[in-house]
Each structure stands twice: as C-alpha cells, then as structure tokens.
Amino acid sequence: MDTTCSHTARVFGQGVVIFLVIMSLAAGSDGRSITVGDSHGWSAGTNYTQWATKNSPFHINDTLVFKYPLPGNSTIAQSVYMLPNLWSYTTCQFRGAKLLGSAAQGAGEGLKVELNQSRPYYFASAEGNAYDCIAGLTKFIAVPSSTHLY
Ligand SMILES: *[C@@H]1O[C@H](CO)[C@@H](O)[C@H](O)[C@H]1NC(C)=O
Ligand SMILES: *[C@@H]1O[C@H](CO)[C@@H](O)[C@H](O)[C@H]1NC(C)=O
Ligand SMILES: *[C@@H]1O[C@H](CO)[C@@H](O)[C@H](O)[C@H]1NC(C)=O
Ligand SMILES: *[C@@H]1O[C@H](CO)[C@@H](O)[C@H](O)[C@H]1NC(C)=O
Image (cartoon, rainbow, N blue to C red):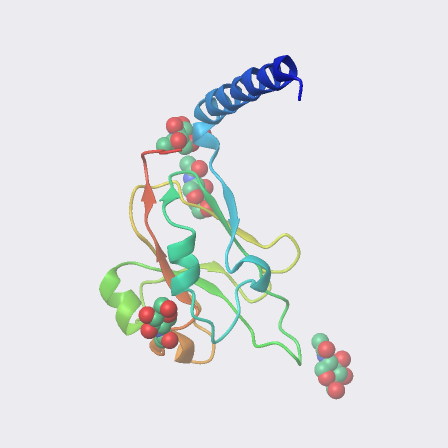
C-alpha cells in the first residue's frame, strides 16, 4: 500500500467535496427538477403521499414535472389542478382551482410547474368526476422551503 498516494487521493477527495459544496451554494437558486411519481409518472388511482414525503423538503425554485400520456384507449385521462387552499384540496372542490395542465399537456417532456412562491401547493387531478381526489389518490401537497440545507 502506497501511503503517500492514498494520502494524496484523500486530500484531493476533500478538495472535490469542498468544491462541490461551493458549487451547490452558488447554484442554490436554480432548484431541482423532480419528476412526480418518478418513472411511474402522474397516474390515476395512485397514492402520492409516500412519494411526496420521500422527496421532501421541496425548495423554492424546484420544478415539478408531471408526466402523463395523451388520453387513449389504454390510459385514463389525467390533468393537473392547483387548488386554492387545504379545505378545497381535502373536499375536492375544484371551483376556484387553477388548471395547470390539461389532458394533452403531460406528454413528451411533461408539464413543468415551478415552485416559485413560499406557499403550500395543493395538486390534484380532476378526471373521472374527481373520484380519485375524493378517494385521496392522485393528489399531494408540496410546501417549498426557502432554506437550503445540504
Ligand atoms: C428563485 O429564482 C429567482 C429568479 O431566478 C431568484 O431571484 C431567487 O433568488 C430564487 N430564490 C431562491 C430561494 O433560491
Ligand atoms: C382506440 O381504439 C379504436 C378502436 O379499437 C382505434 O381505432 C383507435 O385507433 C384507438 N385509439 C388510440 C389512441 O389508441
Ligand atoms: C412561477 O411558476 C409558475 C408555474 O410554473 C409560472 O407560471 C410563473 O411564470 C413563474 N413565475 C416566475 C416569476 O418565474
Ligand atoms: C397513502 O399512503 C399513506 C402513507 O403510506 C397512507 O397513510 C394513506 O392512508 C394512504 N392513502 C390512501 C387513500 O390509500
């Protein structure tokens, strides 16, 4: 074992770590790009609670990407709504909700939503008469935090 060599490698390794920390602080405002549901995408009848917990905390300027196929014979149509508050989110009152992505907007690169405000974002799909939403499925809350802890 060449101790000089391993020492050099360790010092070099620390240098890389410090460099990466500085880079991530400098790039702090860029945010992450996060695909909702990972490879599963934004699907009907899906519980997103665990996904949202796993990907928390979200940060200001993170971008959520909702991917869902064009409506066809084999897929249930999807959409992305942002509900105004916890009450409308819980009770699935879509009156006053903002349509962010229609059924056609999730294909290809997906629908991008930037979390650029310091407020809770209440997301839900309204397809199938909000049946999923009422069942607690295909919906989640993202609360972007403004503090970055790396
Ligand atoms: C979010 O992005 C905007 C515009 O690029 C920037 O001015 C702001 O500092 C960023 N906010 C955070 C918390 O990174
Ligand atoms: C749906 O099914 C019909 C009849 O089987 C077919 O003609 C049509 O091309 C299909 N559409 C899509 C988008 O797959
Ligand atoms: C904030 O994000 C929303 C949703 O993606 C977008 O429509 C809007 O243009 C963004 N605003 C700024 C100032 O970047
Ligand atoms: C979704 O998953 C969470 C966490 O695993 C669980 O607590 C919750 O009851 C589930 N909701 C539904 C509607 O299945």
